[in-house]
Length: 494
Image (cartoon, rainbow, N blue to C red; front, side, top):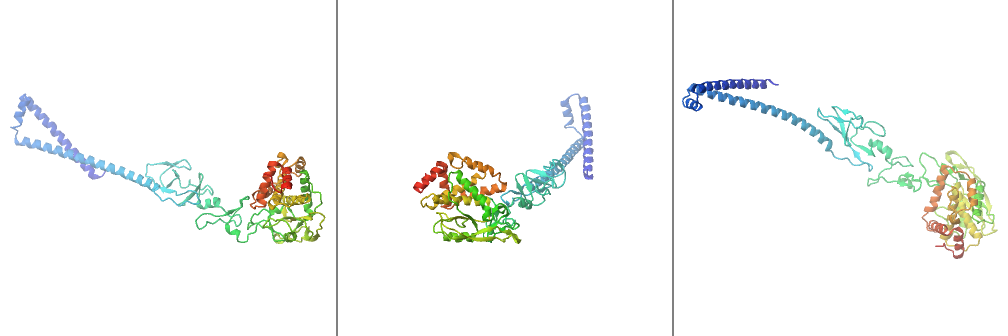
């Protein structure tokens, strides 16, 4: 306690003691005198009018001393209360400022549609303690964070990705996990599957990218116009760090599709026999021996120009059922891979088609995976079967639609998923044939699903709408009844 306060208390004590002595003294004097006169009323008559001057001054001094003592005591108590109140007020104000600093801040802009937060450092006054939400221990004096409705040691507030403390002004959240903004971007901001860069935002500030509807390959919109090649089979774009195989006719083939690609006419013959067995299982045997030839893109386009009739799937034709006599260039020996993943040393030879029946040959584009080659072959075989069976000239959507139905049916037989309800899809012979093929690899099954998806989702009015109408008719009435209705009316049954 300061020296000035000590003097005040000494003065207070002196005055009080002096006042008490005088009070007791006065009381003793009055008692003796009262006892002496023997009557209180008389005592009053004795004292009031007849007190001497010295006695009155002594009484007056007693009252003054008493008033001074009480005043000094009251001032001292008031000072101590003011000091205590001031100390408490300072602590309260310090606590209020700390809380206010932790609450009053501008919310940051959101990043990638995920909440972004700001950890705020807080200094609490001595005597206040909090529990860290990270290590569950008490937070002592010093700097710590108030964030996410909890308190943290700065070293306990860590990124879920890199496990380093988050000391930045802003951070990102995914679920209940905290991230540095850079770590969150690395994990969750979409990257282009072609160039492997972060996909940029458009002028509106939104992330804009393209995605394949089946493979879900994400890529920058610019790659649709910068010459990035696609696989001619699965349609996926070529990543910059993966080289596709360049075929002789300018097409590109991804390594997955190359794994089961059919590259020459000889290699395709076992598949041709499989398709013939499939048709025989449906009681639709092709009686004539129709030549099957694998050809390059240019030879297929030339043969298409030589046909008088027919409808062709744009933008690229991958199979033809020919009825005219002409000479085509077929692939006799498959190419080999050279430098830069380019095919080379492929041997072709001319093949003259003669008209012995209404079908002269079936041409298939080379270099496609086995399942895609088979579905194209099943499609063209249906054209051949209907011509050899004497079907009338059909509208394009009916003819191409029923051919797509047969291609789709053959794909189903390759994965033990074919339906035989109402005899619409397969017979027991095709089921036994299917069991002999063995299980497909996961990659080949995925490719088969994609080729089925292509048929089912085709948006063209001839191939797409035609398939969906034919598929519905076959599912409802069965394949044989549907074909008989087409033979008689030229239309699908409803």
